[in-house]
Length: 347
Length: 149
Image (cartoon, rainbow over the protein chains, first blue to last red):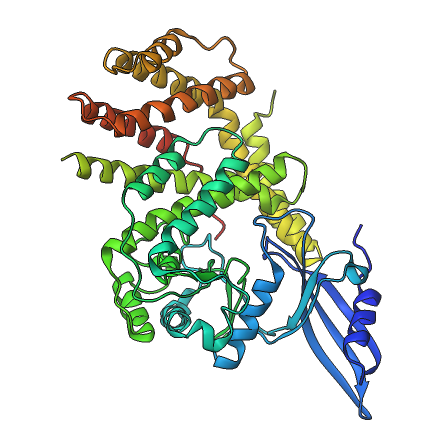
């Protein structure tokens, strides 16, 4: 049964907004997606300075079990860093770790209204708006890479990382997830890990903000095809910007349209726009490493979500589905890719 | 069981997606039933082929191990490969086949890692043979995504 969160959220908002009175919350509705956190849409109303105020909000609460285990303060800080830069991200409002309010940590941010997210499992997720959306999608990603993580505050409270350590840091992290969560031996994932370790990529020209899950489905666009909100920063970190480029172009999104990644614009044009906005060139050798890595990272996430479901930690089908379908896709993508790389190395 | 299980699963998929989901007022519940319906659609395919896929994979891995046992020089690995190659699936229950499949996959990982580090004359051929198997197995397990449009 759905718990009645409205009065509890209203009490919290009243606490955080001392100048407000008669705080009320209505229309609390859990929304799909955001598999690593419970996401709720709601509307807050209050009185302040003799005026009636109304604001639609989003509340993201830590789950009991999740697709990925992430720190909500890292995600909240990413919104705080990029919102003032003009990048379309919602305004972050309150971060709360005291369990007395909603039993689990959560944060509150602006709700972007009258928008939708495209499905990552649709060959044409943006329909006739695909070209327009795609050009913004890749340009915005370039802008994330171009931003100075220290100046924006993105890297505040993050451990610094050297350019030549980015690949190993990420690979170690996701290999550990597979080590801890695999329910059956994973020959293709293990082969990918060995290949990645034997073929380390060149370092990036500089360490940048990495969104970590920048893809079809993780942003909102309006009826005119304007991207209004880049969401789901829960896996953001410092690293090689080609990690995001490769994830955005991963074959999983929009059914393996490798020449039109994510069902938007042509790959060559996408990469040109990214280079223009980031001020960096895409090194094909580095990109290849991050492409293989991202399919492996995908496998790690799907393996982990399957374990959460199978263990009984969660009965949310959003955890079981990717463990079936996305594991299947990434195993095929990696098997074909690594078989070709193996042949190339032996010839 | 009649009607056939895949027929029933696909029927449930259509009912959940076209009749139940649109009548749910809670957005999250509608999203969840959409996901569940897709998984039921995939179950229809998997129900029919699950045993065949696993028996084929297990037989192919054992054949590969029999071949590799005659090539690899590491005595311990050679013995494990020869032993695994002799085994047979004792039951056609999917759970039993899965258990055997997992044991064989673990040995395949060990063999592949060994071969990748080897410069022996047989290494390139054996590595290619392993990849042929992995590509075939991954393609064979491909799940059909339901046409939603």
